[in-house]
Image 1 (cartoon, rainbow, N blue to C red):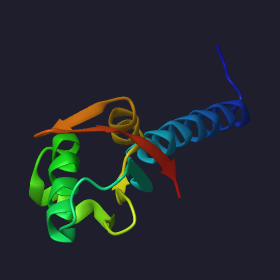
Image 2: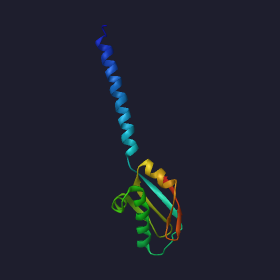
Image 3: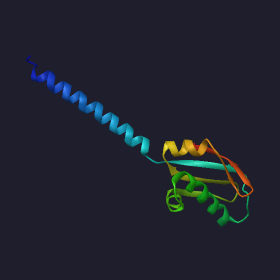
Image 4: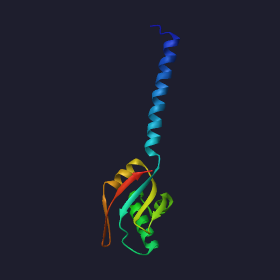
Length: 114
């Protein structure tokens, strides 16, 4: 069976393009985008305590408090409670789909892609 060189090159190029698209999709799925996590009314009047609670909440999603501190972009702690953080889509879905409880406080979470 004799396959023309042009057909082989076209087939090789097509496979290369499809593999490249798949790899780009996989990389994009792991890319962190900034999401705003709105927690509603602030539960404390101490801004540092509010930020610490935000770190604790994010740590439950990302695995450690150190990683949470690294990923958090901003802590909304004066007018309302919330934070902006660099999250993957799956982390954002995980945090948006749950309610979290701290001490006597319960948070229903909403996220918004910035």
